[in-house]
Length: 132
Image (cartoon, rainbow, N blue to C red; front, side, top):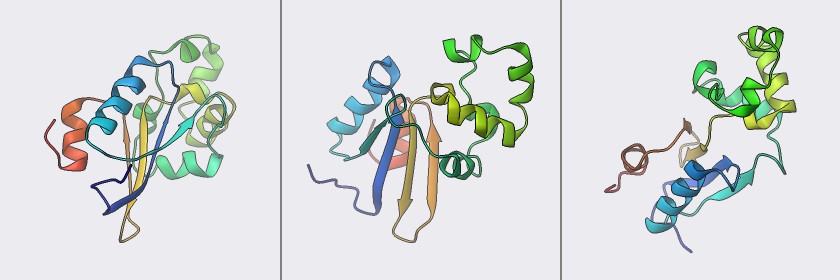
């Protein structure tokens, strides 16, 4: 499939295949002929450097999915420590399903990086300049 959005390449989508929100986002991207490289967080956790890079664009409070089972399974001490970015990066590296899904990581032709978490049709339409 060839992407109509050649000004943004490559587009990396991070998530887990059985997540409903990730499935919806992938369906939306396919419907709009937007090609992505999918990264299964469970099979291929992101590097600490990638997580640190994402934190330049997404606040830690948004990057961590505090509604998920992985967060709820953390100890109170781990939850408190996760407020520190360095500790959070290590924690996310060891438990990548803490990341709010899906996460889009893309660069435009100028090399500017863009990162977005979560999914709604309106959000993706705004990112890609397409009708929702």
